[in-house]
Image 1 (tube, rainbow, N blue to C red):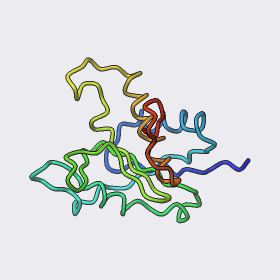
Image 2 (image 1 turned 45 degrees about the vertical axis):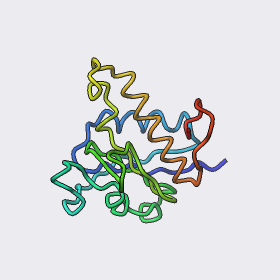
Image 3 (image 1 turned 45 degrees about the horizontal axis):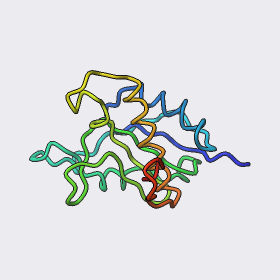
Length: 149
């Protein structure tokens, strides 16, 4: 079976731990090889100062097409807070071939809980796999235990 190649791209300043986790964990779940994490700046044209957030759709459009890097999928990761349309916040967004996740609201501390690296790592991985599923053409699932729920 051919491994799917995923290009991991950090948008702006990103804690290196989630990038390392994704490079280690995604291949254990999906038939993939995650390429070394590259980086690109957050475009100021997608920042909405009144919200203190970036427009997820705009950042997703800035994400290189997978073929440009020789990969099958592009996965962007950012520490910035994201919104999309009428949604006040989003954890991630995807279109065919490209996915973007934000770690901003995945930390337990965001919800007033104590820091918990295991919970944080699980949330980052779950969100990444969910958005990669969308990038591969999967839709949401009705089963609550499914990563595409």
